[in-house]
Length: 126
Image (cartoon, rainbow, N blue to C red):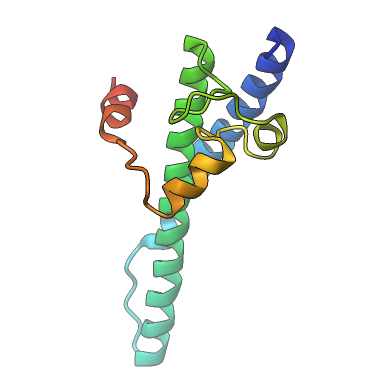
């Protein structure tokens, strides 16, 4: 991957990181509210559950983006973490934070490959 391409992906990832960081700060939607009507309370609980799921999804994506930025920094960006083959340019364009090639990602999704996130948790905490 050329230096210009790496810079392009780095700027895309940094922009997405800034967007997600801003949205994750707003947690007003997960406040537990009480309503006098039982149906209103059920609706509020449903909305809160949806907001929690969105927050969880965005948090996971932010972690993936931070890992991708780390791979850019250490020179391993664009290489599958499992089979160590280059990730196709189409995939990198579609999902700049992709850590696996299509074949390996399918195996991860089917739980055929174990993914160890604990090392990333400690790295992102530092």
